[in-house]
Image (tube, rainbow, N blue to C red; front, side, top):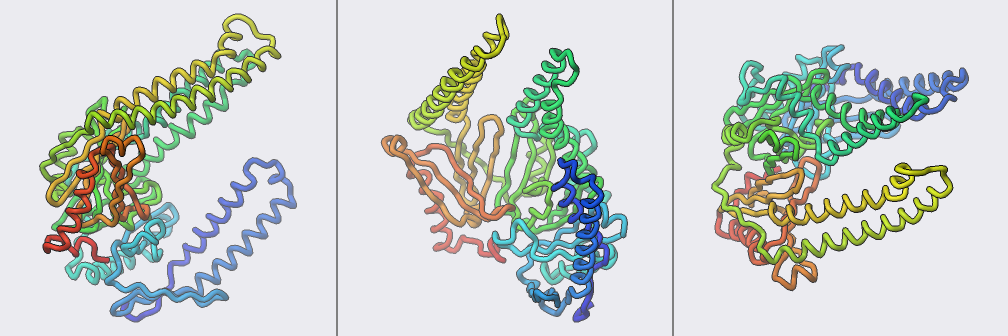
Length: 486
């Protein structure tokens, strides 16, 4: 295989044509003009031209695996030659969509460890499954300088079954998403019940299906057959019912580990784990790789000890000081004032609208005061947010790791390594500055490019310690350069 020029499997032409057809269909999906004969013939002509151009592009595109690099070359009107040194490759993901499974092919997605291409793979190559597996093993040897480890379907660090997949699909949705879904479903039922003509309630019902039901089903399909395990310092992850997703990465590539829980999942004492691994956003259905689906908190702790023991340490949580109440209260007051002003204005407009309608009794009262009710609920929610924001946020500073705890309804516990930190910013507004407080913002490479993890209000000297520890580790020799190798 070394030095030989290869072409991708011709099924890539069909896959690209299908994508073009889907885009055209979306452009005309809401237009009755699509049914006209001349429009249909024009669309077919466009698809035929696109298929021809895509075929020529496939025909003139080759990939060559040399001794030290991958060379992609396209000899069309717009020529392209791209060289990817094996030493720069961070991850090789294997993705098998519907078309791949029909033709018995696999899609190799090559990422380098940088924020520039974190959202888009540096190279996407499609070959027959047997050839793709052989290429991946060869590339892994170049990357890791060791014998490749096969994926073993029978073993898994976690026992994830259909029930876990279903629970994750239902309760990993954000609280805002769940509340919106409940509101839309209730509105649909109310309109269906009150509509004697039988046409009301369809729009909110459709929105409920799009906002809640469809994402839940997609999540269940995406995470079906979930398996994760670790061999030596490499983590293997695979899942998927229709489109098979499979990847592996070294633990040194993990920039942060985040334990997440939604309001609904905490009612069951459950959370899930995701990681920041640059290059793994090629899993297009989720921005970050999930290492463990929703499980009881005790199981989550055991899973982290087995999968990412590098991110386990004895945490000493530091809560926000009492003086943090003041800048939080000022924020809440500003937001509440804006809500009140907006609702007063909307109530004034609604009163004028109600006079033009032939309403009376409860209906008239409801229409006239609907924004007053909504505004009151939002103000109460803002006050509750301020109270819980003060109580929940915390930081922990260890010798090699540190943790930020954030979130009111949807909580995240993010543990980071000092050696992964790129930039530390300490910001303080006029109210916080008066009490010697500040907000810390830590920048590090993430699965979606550059990411920031923001703290609550803490004494400025405590937040400055993060930057000081990073610099001390670089000067006293404790800084591990291997954790930031390309």
